[in-house]
Image (cartoon, rainbow, N blue to C red; front, side, top):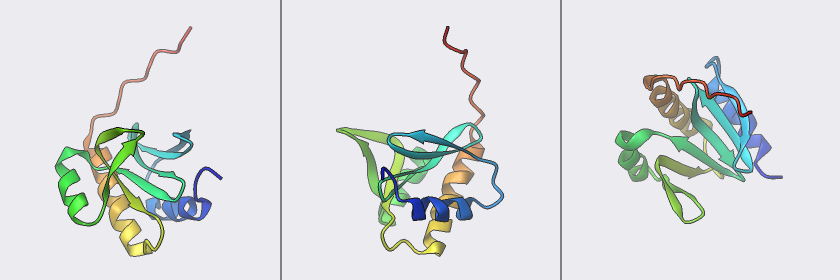
Length: 113
């Protein structure tokens, strides 16, 4: 299993009525809001895009810098899914959704030929 399916179900519940799309990415799931990767799951880790403005505050709340291999992902953090309460999950998700909705939608990519 590449991602925690229970955490994925909890994440879907936390997103509630938010319009989102789910894409398999990074060996896990990515939840796209307003055409932006907003939250995701890799193994049992929650990854969140909070932007550079929300990054330091998230680290102060216990998040870790999001890394892919040796690369630190700018504006993204990870939070352990183990022991994450529903209330805490909801807070993280709302913060990430607010950030995604504040960004202009990405232009559609031209299909590869």
